[in-house]
Amino acid sequence: MALRIVPELIIFDCDGVVADSETLANQLLAESISRIGRPTTMEDSIRLFMGKRWEDCKRAIVDWTGEPLPASFETDHKARSRGRMRNEVSSVPGLEAFLEAHRSYPKCIASSSEHAWLNHCVDKFGLRPHFGVNVFSAVEVANGKPAPDIFLYAARRMGVPPEACLVLEDSPSGVTGAVAAGMTAMGFLGGSHVLVGHAERLRSAGAHHLARNFAEVTQLLAGR
Image (cartoon, rainbow, N blue to C red):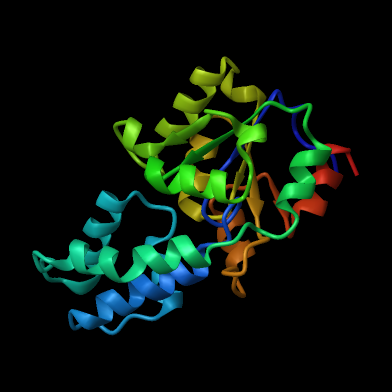
């Protein structure tokens, strides 16, 4: 099956596409929410909060718990999680080989995460030669995913029309945003956090294609 387009730009989400971080991140977030009185599982966290900016995530947690967050919630959560995330995160399997094999494609990252985390991952995994400074955070735009803002911003910064962009996204909110931006959305299932039913959630969000790993992304790029 060929892609809908011959992409002029590949836009990567970070968490779950570049960094295999979602399992640990959602486990830690579920533990923090459980500590304030609403029992929450990692699966709950993935379903409800994955792919959102931190400010949007906090609002979603309030909706989930039905209570205002304690004043210390953000500070306590980040104190518990920051060190583990930075030390334990690894790249998604197959990422480096994919980037090496497709050096000819312009690339960037467009993520809900903050710049400090994005740059930590890029540098830790040795990806600066592939992405350079083309690492964009949703803190730079008015609305986070599922709005299209971060994708349109990334395309504008890269000088590529939206319809010529391929987006690799692992979250339903990211897929929704990519589709709303007029881009080709590939639902990516290569992270360790992907559970039964995740492919259907990405398809329901509007993914034009699904890829279980980077080898399948390569096949789609090659029209196979």
